[in-house]
Length: 85
Length: 306
Image: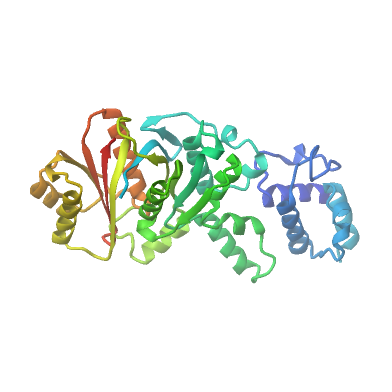
């Protein structure tokens, strides 16, 4: 899980152009969206959907689950671990 | 046309920003405080936005009645990224950011969003006459009673677009360049001693030296200005420059070395140079900008002081 979390941090930094942030700066349990975390927005959510589909072959079937899945790097990693074939 | 005044002229070339010809330090992080907006901006967007924001500095958003931008080729880096993603991902799962940022109106749109300017916002993409079209529109907006118009021109060069233009034989004579210019335009009121655009004319297609000379005579005649009283700024070739010099004996000819820096909205840089010189020199004289973009798109911009 730790390895996947670190990989995800690197992918988020690269795909979302988080040029001023290093992997160590990202708290795996902090919220990705809104205040108090990375402060990502709806365009970033689309980019994360693409990371899941392209890099892990995972499609989110139920959009209502998005809020829980995208809460933090840790919740993303847990979802990938549970759904990757 | 009704004359328009250039109240402020900003240019970004490389990392150097000038306001009315004088270098001014700037920090992009201060200009665009929102990190999430900054990280999505490509180089051309940063160039244009920095230059535009600097030009609009000190003005309340509601006093800016229009943002008119010009670009010959637009946001190339983002366009390339988006097109590459179409190919690599087999037309599926395309990233939204390069698509959103690749549109021609990205720079005008970003400036409007950042400053909360809700007025007229248009981008002209007319090859080598994009800036001239934007300038004509700015003059028409002022003639219709608008107060301040933010007029800009931005073009960038990327390795792949330079390579394509070389392969197409477009750059046999030229080295490609890039730059961002913004001007604050408003109605000309006599007594301010600011540079003013008195007339603009454009033509497309190849013109002979005789046709160019005739055209210059025509624009000066209709504005009641003697060709010998002009300072000429031009990127035309040596033959035409020599003919202009011999025939008109102008006060001076400033030759922009087009061979070192060619891009579709280069005439905006000529306007910045001419306007900055007119502002700094503080003497009354007329300027004629003779733009000969790749011998295909031509424009004449006549300036005076008002």
